[in-house]
Image 1 (cartoon, rainbow, N blue to C red):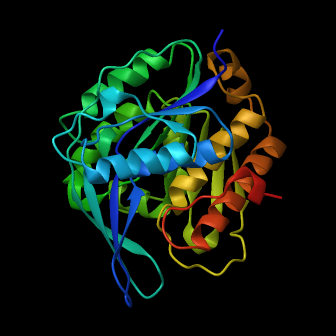
Image 2: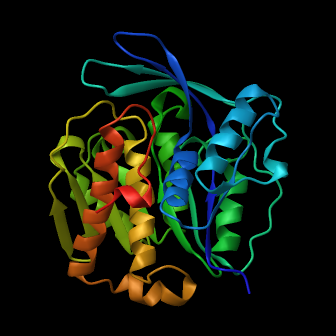
Length: 304
């Protein structure tokens, strides 16, 4: 029998980071790839289903992720070119993105060793490929917990009303949804964070977590909101911050034995103290990521 593992589905690309001062630099990135890298560095068995070119940038990403214990199948290396994201940083280190994306879902088998399947951001929303991501999650849900981060990208996702239709389709499949207050604002036209989170719980999610930048994060379970302050850390930039938080969230759920279809009832009835521990773990991991340049989540040995 195979050991329990995570399956992460979505884009891996090159982040071309343009700071306010200094030279532009290239890093391996992409929201789902960053989530996978976070899990790999935390010693969780993880495979990334993605779409890379067999070119210099694609091989750089593959090798970079391999160094972080992320498995990538050869079928994920058949794109015509490797995608890029131009990340322009402002004075606070916050990034805005412009994308050049090539995406489709390669053929993949989802066996019973997969106890968590995660999707998010661009690959789950746009076509071609988005519908295939939904179908893959539907297959995985038979034996895996489904986690989802909309991670909205307005420059490539089109009109928010249309993007939100697809995002809600995936939320209906998800057990855990992580998002940001900025994403909720863009997708809903300014609806209240708590109102939106509770709507998503009614759609079927067991846990909704909303990150709020310097104001920390909030978790929602039926009838309860739990707030966690942000860690006191000097921010270098925010590239990959939400992704490492998502990876930390999955890692914490794994440690609490709340992943897999067999634990769906336990997740649905999660206790408040457990949610606090999960938020604290995810926050500490994200804090390390923002304290250094690029999407560079911590290794397990760096955590106290």
